[in-house]
Amino acid sequence: MTLIKRVGKVLAVIVVFLAVSDFASHQYVNHVEKQRLVVTLAKHPKKVLFFYRDDCPDCQAIFHQIYWHNVISHNIVFINMNQPKNRQYIQKYQLTSVPTLIHGKQRYTGTNQQRIKQIVGD
Image 1 (cartoon, rainbow, N blue to C red):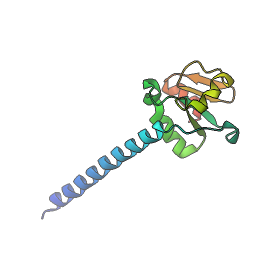
Image 2 (image 1 turned 135 degrees about the horizontal axis):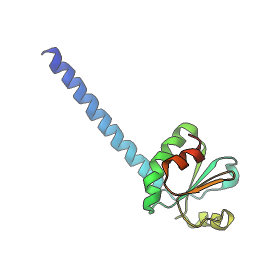
Image 3 (image 1 turned 30 degrees about the vertical axis):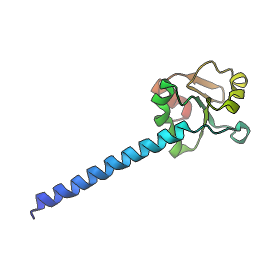
Image 4 (image 1 turned 90 degrees about the vertical axis):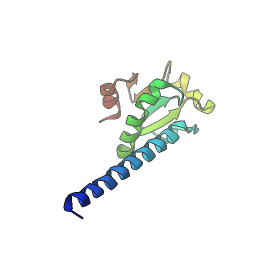
């Protein structure tokens, strides 16, 4: 077998591995997004609060970016507003729509990548 064929096979295996890994990680993040855990914010002082709904297209559009940022920084609390017990935060944080990010006095509602980076501290 020539060197070119061996290199080609190795590259093919690497490409397949990367594709499968990407698919699996994408599926996992989608699973996390759909969770409707009850969140107690008193346990998370000074963290970025990310209010979203798992059936909201705008929330879905930015969820992966925020999730992967949190994998590295561990500074974001995910609050799915489709969990009825999390709706207590609507009045407390004067939420009018999702996705909304709150960090201290900073607040942003929307999907602008640059604004999100400013809030989450990229």
